[in-house]
Length: 200
Image (cartoon, rainbow, N blue to C red):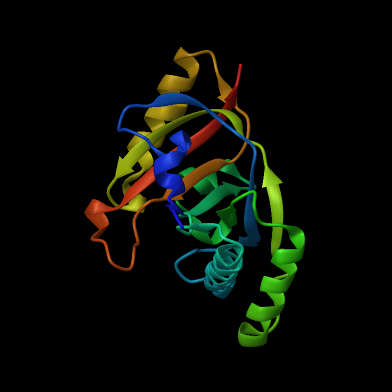
C-alpha cells in the first residue's frame, strides 16, 4: 500500500522565498475556531490536541480501507476584529481557525466515528470542531524561514508592496501552514508558508 504525502503531491503545499501567485483548490479540513493568545490560551491547546487526535484516527480508518497517507501539516487562519491588533502582535485579541486537511476519501460518517473514539479519551469536544470544505482560490504565498514573531517584514512586503503592485486586495483571512514541528525545531529554522487569498 503506497503512502501519500500531500506536501509532495499537492503544489500549493510547496513554496519558495519568492512571493508567488497560486490557485488553491477547494479542500476538506478538520477545523476548530477560537480566540486568544496561541501561546497561553487553554482553548488553543485543546484545539490542537483534538485536531491531531481526530486526524490520526481518520488516517487509521482510511488505512483500514486501503488508503494510507501522511497526516498533513497543521494550518491556521488568523485575524482580529481590529486589524491593528493583528499587525501589532497583540495576541490576546487574535481570532483563529486551526485546521488539518482531510483527504476526500474521508466521510462525515468516518469523522463522527473518530469524534466518538477521541471523545472517550479527551472528554467534551470543542463546540466548533467540524469537518468542512474550504475554498480559498486565488492567493499569493511565500515561504518564511524563522520565528513566527519575525514574519512582520515578509507580510509587509506581501501586503503593502506585492498586492498593490499586482492590482490585488484581500479576499480572506491570513493563512499559515506549519511545515516544521515547533516542538523539535529551532525558532530560526521554522518553515512556514504564509498565504493571503486575494482578488482584483
